[in-house]
Length: 118
Image 1: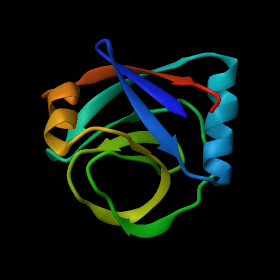
Image 2 (image 1 turned 45 degrees about the horizontal axis):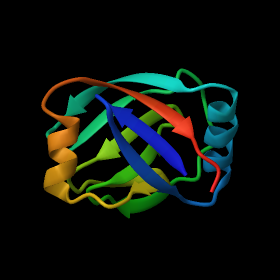
Image 3 (image 1 turned 180 degrees about the horizontal axis):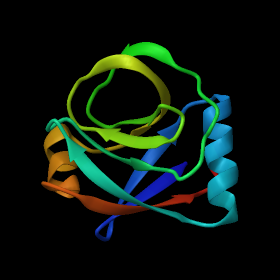
C-alpha cells in the first residue's frame, strides 16, 4: 500500500500489480518522495517523480481516486474522468469524490509518498 500525505491527511492507495508499481515500491522503500503537484483542467493534480519509470500504458477512462503514471515520469491523482493512454498505479481507498477534492484543494499542492508493506 502507498500512502500519500496531503497537508497532514493520509490517502491510502491500493496498488495495482505491474512493473511500474514495482519500480515505485523500490523508489519509496529507499526514502519518502515529495512531489510538488499542479492542478490541471479541474480534473487532476500532477507532478514529476524526477525519474523515468517503466510504463504499462492502456487506453482507459480515469475515475476520481485513480493514481496514474503518465508519460513514464508524472505522478497523477485524478478527481474527475479523463480518457487517454495511462499506466494505472492504484486507487485511493475510502474517499468520495467530494472528500478527495476537499483534501487536494484548489491550485497547487505538495504531497509526500511513502510505502507501507501490507
